[in-house]
Structure formats: structure tokens, C-alpha cells
Image (cartoon, rainbow, N blue to C red; front, side):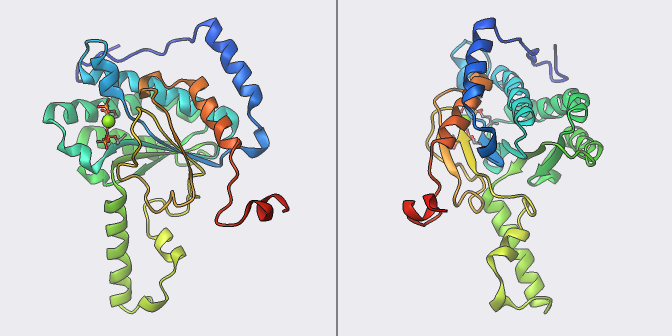
Length: 271
Ligand code: IPE
Ligand code: IPE
Ligand code: MG
């Protein structure tokens, strides 16, 4: 299947039988009563995936769309409430023009392709980031997907596009400063809740689990405020190879951790 930009877009592949069996075994290990309410993902490694196969980086991006579909499906099936995907950062605008252009076309094309299934599965799309910077064609498709899914009450899917945490925090600071200057609020009584409510993620609970694929151990300007107490999971698996089994492994690992939020282990276990 070809995207409008001419990039070969991967079709959805069925996992081989052996993979299904592995997935079933992993899914049985997940405690459905202790699921993360919100999972955030830094989807990294598309370019390396493609280059290691002698392909253009853009082929890695198109293959990455398949992984987006897989993690959305599994999140929905498990009943995870919120999934936040880092698709394009503020800093990614500094990539070569051709790659940026291809990515923008791919994002618009993919959201249009996926929209019927998203609606059928009751998935609501939220757009997080400086969406005005997205070129008009893909932006229209993104806004259309957001509007058409506005009534969906299942998985809340946040697509972070032209997003960075520092962009978001700077914008929040400006908003709060303007409100204080106009006398609407008292600067001295600005609370953590006021800051959270001024972020692009207002109303969305903080991520419980942050997954980064692609082998790097960094945050790359993602949700710096919101991940204060998230559990971090790093995997060397490149994003296009991140399948449902890999996702299940991350959730199982998350469930093995003790979240103390500054308290002692005794305090947390004696609840
Ligand atoms: C992540 O994959 C996708 C985006 C940042 C848009 P990369 O394109 O960063 O792939 P690598 O990290 O170079 O392999
Ligand atoms: C992070 O990946 C951004 C997204 C996944 C959208 P990058 O590939 O841009 O991050 P760095 O450059 O390795 O920090
Ligand atoms: Mg990268």
C-alpha cells in the first residue's frame, strides 16, 4: 500500500502462530486488577530499523505505523484508560526537510486510514503539541480524526505532535503569568494543580508507565512534569519491532515494581 508521499506503507501482518502462543502466555501473566491507568511511549528506532535492512529511514517510519496499531489495540483490549504516543518532537523539526515532509504526509495518511477502526473500537484521539505548525493537509486529517472521535469513551489516545515538554511548560508559564497580571489569579497562590491544569495534558492523569524503545536512556523533552513518578521502562527493541508481546513484557515488569511515592516500603505494603 502506498502513502500519498510514495513511501511504501506496511500492511498489517498477522503474527505467526508461535508468536501468538508466546503472547497468550504473557497475557495470562498480566494482573488485570493492577494495570497501569496511563501508559506513555517514546517510539524510537524507526530510522535504525530501516537502515539495518538497507532501506530508507522513511520505510522505518511507515513500518512504525503498524506498531502504533498494535499498542493501541492491546491497550484497548486490556482496558488501559490512556495511551500517550510521542510521534514528533519540537526538535524533530530540525531533521532534513525531506524526512520531515515524509513524516508529516505519513502521519496524515495513517490517521485517515486508521480512523474507521479507531471509531469502531471507541478510541478517542487527542492532539497534544503545537498543532498549528503541522502542514495544512495532515493537520486537517488530524483535526478531523480528533473531532470524529470526540464522543468515544474507550481508550483515550494522545498523539504528541510538534510537542516538547519545555514548549508546554513555557506556554503554561505564559498563561499563568497573564492571568496573574490581569488580576484573575493571585501569583503567590499558584499551586501544582494550577500548573497541571495549564498544561496540554490538563485533565489527563499522569502516566504510570513510560516506555522508550530503541535503546536510548533518555527522555528527549517528553512530559517532564507529568512523569515525576512514572515507572520507566527502556528496551533495546526498535519501534517497528515492538509488538504486543513486547508491550505485555513491559506491563508485567511494571507490575513487579513497588511504587512508593516517597514513602517507605512498610508504609506502602501495610495499606
Ligand atoms: C523515532 O524514530 C521516530 C521519530 C522521532 C519521528 P527515529 O526516526 O528517531 O529513528 P532512529 O532513532 O534514528 O533510529
Ligand atoms: C524522541 O526520539 C522523539 C520521538 C520519538 C518523537 P528522537 O530520536 O527524536 O530522540 P533523540 O534525538 O534520540 O533524543
Ligand atoms: Mg531516534
